[in-house]
Image (cartoon, rainbow, N blue to C red; front, side, top):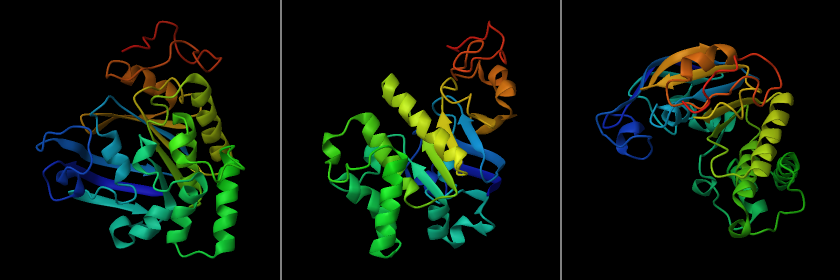
Length: 267
């Protein structure tokens, strides 16, 4: 379980959000996350939605200590993130918006093995994790493929496999569909669906609800760093449609009638 209590992150403050290392907006005076309290249960499929600059990326990077809040607390499985960064980063598998920011090895197999190797696991355990992670993203037999030769969708799948090899409690994917064509998007969606069905908590960060809202148990919407909605997908759509978030029209991508036909998908 991930628990945030009264979390605030400022650019230019004392936490990592202030050092320019990450961020959705560059103004050093910006409050990126503003007094957010949030609980993410194990096994939940959570969508964190908001326009560009709403604080989504900053928020989820507090989950495993990539960003330290200026105030408030973050704990994972009952332990404060700052007290045990390794445990937090094992429990929270993070897939960045651009997979190139986290792919560190020349080959697929080497990259997926990187995290488990740094945990000091045995060769047998590392091989098992790599094999299972590659199977989960349909890349069995491609261990020796060069990262540089992969398509954008394939790199996304390798990044997901690298996170899965850590056997996390929660898999966090930041804008996982950016730049992907339709087959690649469907492939990534399928993998996220399978991980959720297998019991892994999934958190998807997005400005476009249309791909994932049919999978979501819950949607948390952000605007200017604050939570503006925390509820079911049906509750989220009207709350976010005017805040720079693309929302489904009618039963788009659902095959049902949870949403009125006149919802604007381009708001």
